[in-house]
Length: 157
Image 1 (cartoon, rainbow, N blue to C red):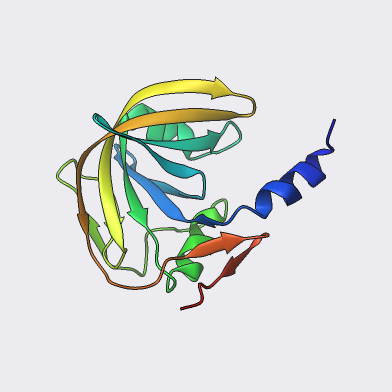
Image 2: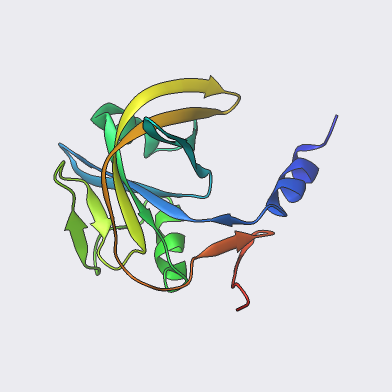
């Protein structure tokens, strides 16, 4: 059996993009950064993301029964770091747009989706969340924010 650190290091060699998962709640906006986000199906239009059971943000997003996804660009490393910190004031000092459902999206993100949670599956120490994309759009033209081996990286042209 692999040691947990070795397993994390191995999976860290798989390069991923980074997205913000945000929701409007009665207590205000909440959000978290994820690199475990993927497309699932074109018909119906489904995406998936994973949320740790230890997340203090996931319970509020789950209760909202939906969320927005902002695909981050290479200019968003600091924003991603902010959304990765516990207790950080994640929504101040930036421009935010809102989906028709009221979920915040980074105004300068590369693209966005508004999603309705359809299924949640327990998966080890995470929940695997399947959601239907109900609305979306393209925003900025920039390079993606890429995460590899525990740090942000750029793509070569």
